[in-house]
Amino acid sequence: MKKMILFSIIIGLFLIINASAISVEMKESYERQETMLVKISGDIREPITSDNIVLKRGHVLVPLEYEVKRIGNDYYLWALSPLNENNYTLWINNVVTSVAGVVNKTNFAYNFTTTNVLTDYYIKPAVIYTNKDFEIRAYNNGDTSKEISVDFLESRNVILQPGDNKILFSIKDVIGTQTINFSIGKYSVKAYIIGKAESNDGTEINISVNVSGIEIIFIPQKIKREVIANEEETYLISVLNDGDDIESLSLEYDKNIFSISSELPSSLENGKRFEFNLSVKTDKEIKEEITLKADDYTFNLPIEITISELPAQNKSTVKGMFYCDELAGKICKGGEVCSIETITSLDGECCKGECAEESGSSSSLGIGYLIAALVLIGIIFIYYKYRKVKNEKNPLTRKIAEAERKFP
Image (cartoon, rainbow, N blue to C red; front, top):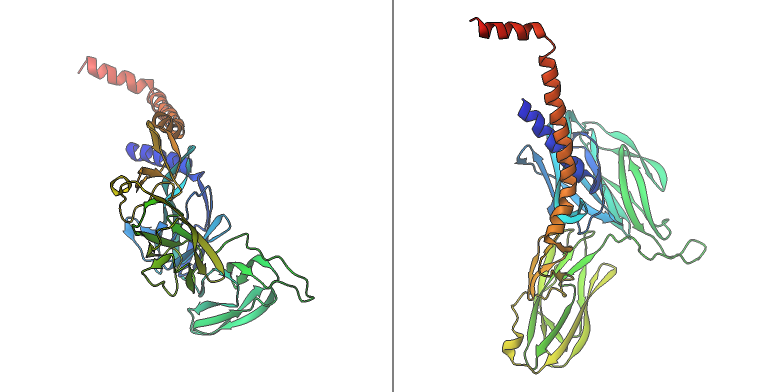
């Protein structure tokens, strides 16, 4: 019992230290199959994707229907709560954030329960990013129709028939780029809408996107090489979708300079990636860009190649690997350690976090735990002092025990 109390105190203090890194807004209890809308915010240094999200019941993985989307600096997770009544833990794993002043990868756990009540209806999705009309599906779990109120730009009532229902939304009256919170019955929906560029009277509206729901990350983020004359170079390029689902992709490049071996996918979901081989066909110096168009957005991969006359053995590379600078990282100096897991690059272990002196890093990280340890020692001291005083409150019992030892 005593060990369990001490263990709970330690875990509680550990969670208090980690809690300041990110903030998660979610309910403590949900009905079965209820639509969950979870906001994740804070000092998040690398994108959160669907691969970071895990749902567990104790130590057992539980299937979860969900999506993660980013709006501005915040991430929104919508999901359907499990069908079984139980206690669950939502894990957000490998979040690159600052803990006790040091950038590191940390796992966060958030507990919630599902009740024994099956929700009367649920919706999906609960987060929208769009520049066109959209639909949200509402599922009526009952055997009879149900009327709910929908409040998007203006209020209206919708009849949900048993089973699957489509609720259609028009953005024709949305002017400019807007973040809109609206309701579908008992549910709240987060929407980022790119509306029309001018108002009804013809006035132009600035719709420059300052909150990106579509974001493409090239790996590497640039190619800057010195290569051997008359030697063809091939690079394995990875493209990660860190934003909203993409319905159409296309690549634009100078076909006299580059060739691409793989075909692009017709669509790319949030958190997914694809790869292609990029070959350089010319023996001249180049400074070009590969442009990827994703829906109505463009993303560029800068490529700068100079020609060297040095022997090939002095310019050897490994296929599929890149220099740390191309990966937007840095090589830590001797005596320094990276705050997150390093990436193997052509010029050594590449750090995309922060480099810090080894001793300084451990001492900075230990400040929070030192405070926790001091608090814990204080609690233990008070506990044992209290127990000692409590044992001495009955002197008669103590004297009887001493007499029994002297005169058995």
